[in-house]
Length: 212
Image (cartoon, rainbow, N blue to C red; front, top):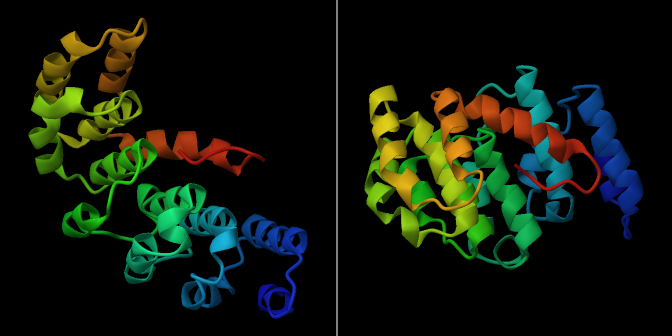
């Protein structure tokens, strides 16, 4: 059905999105191969793709799924490079651990905005890149406010005692009225970054919501 709708000369965007929604609600993985092979063409529907793939992953239907080598080039040029909303949803594939990525490949992705930075920080947390967070403890103030909160969450991949020390080191530099409370809350989520992301990402399925 999806392939048929996309074979038309002029796409009915409403119809295509309805098909993606139906595939997600029915946990239908029949179109995964088609999506993987045609990801660049399907970038206008990247949010729908991410929500579908995430739903399939949660239901155990994406074992061994890997489209990382298709995503990396898309982030380097074209719409995946120049259209922020498409870019952030492509990065969301790694934030939600839908497709695996190494620390080396994450480091090769350009940071074009603070939103990019937030996504890349969370990805480093998801893949437990402890070296990244150890290195950036002393550079915390060089990050934008939006990125700092992601750093606090991402660093929860550190060993428990080290995370307590990490929080203690950056906390004095935070001056927002709720920052101390946020740090205390983050400490209760040590080792549970994926659960936090899953909880936050549920809002992305709502109309008009952004990822994360």
